[in-house]
Length: 261
Ligand SMILES: [Mg+2]
Image (cartoon, rainbow, N blue to C red; front, side):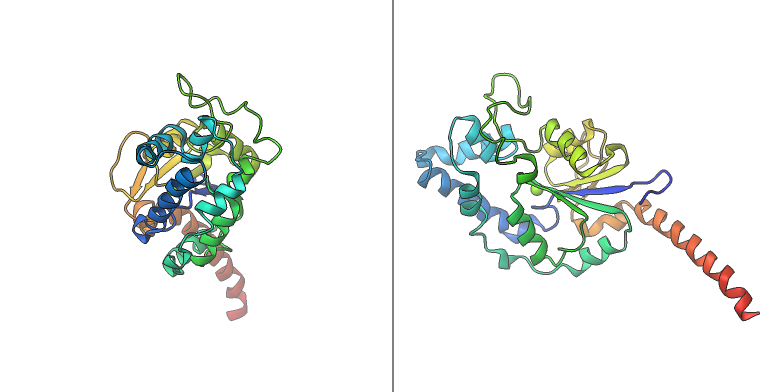
């Protein structure tokens, strides 16, 4: 669906974007990642907290950072350890978000660094499983046949070792997602809670919404404390909808008038 001067696609991160950080799911995720590093990769426990933060910062996900450091592990095993054991019951159906999304007849696409099973579980717990037209997730960007190839991404560059994993915030991840989901970044509004993802997104031509903070910084077009505030923050999304509704209702009147006459 395309509107004149409007957006033809809404692109959404999942974790800490479609549900709030305060749900506690992400804290559990971090706990599981740390356990994986200690128990499965034999990393010294005292080094884990700092390393975890540093790799997330440098690579977008701790997993991508661990692979860059040379740790070799099965991606499915990692995901089932880190995501498979999450207390998904923390997430409840979000009727407010569901009706906001449903009131926008614009294509909606998920773009997450997480694995497919996790994305599906989150969407289903939130009651949003049928609100999106397409899902780009870990498996889309890292198909099994390619993950062993040391070539990547081009990012991060400089002195950091490269990771074979493709994920946000690398610009390459965005470009691949655009190709896969047939997205024109110049007509797309992107929602994410990570400022680094938002800043790369801006470089690719996307319009950006930082979720979970009202702090406007470089690269941020809109900033929302909660995804529930879309309507207040980006009213133009509904203006285009109303315009098309007006056209529809005026047509309806034109058809009905002769019947009433
Ligand atoms: Mg997120």
